[in-house]
Length: 142
Image (cartoon, rainbow, N blue to C red; front, side, top):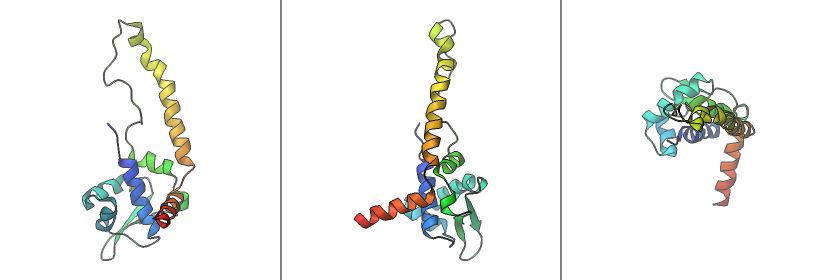
C-alpha cells in the first residue's frame, strides 16, 4: 500500500518553515494540507520524536520547526514518518520446495537495500528550506 506520510510531513514542515519561528496552529496547517487537524497532530508525534518540530502550548501556540529548515533534510523527514520500507518482500514465507522460493528473498535483499539507499541518498540532497524555495518559485509562475 502506498504511503503519503512523507509527502504530508514534508508539506507540514514547509508550512512551518514559511512561518519561520512563529508557532502555527494545527488547524491552519490542516487547511493547507486539506486534512483535519487531528491528523496533523498525529503526524507531529514522530516528527517531534525525531527532533524536527516542537509544540508550543497555550494561546498563540502551535507547531514550529525545532531547528532551522536548512538543517532538516528530506531524508530525516522520511526516516521520521515512514514505518515501512519503500518496497517489501512477500507477506508470507515463500514455498521452500521450489528453488526459487528457497532463494528469492535472499536474492532480492541487496536489490531492495540498494533502492532504499538510493532514495535516502537523493532525499539527503534536499532540505525543507530548498523545498520551500521550490514552492515559492512555482507560486511566482502562477
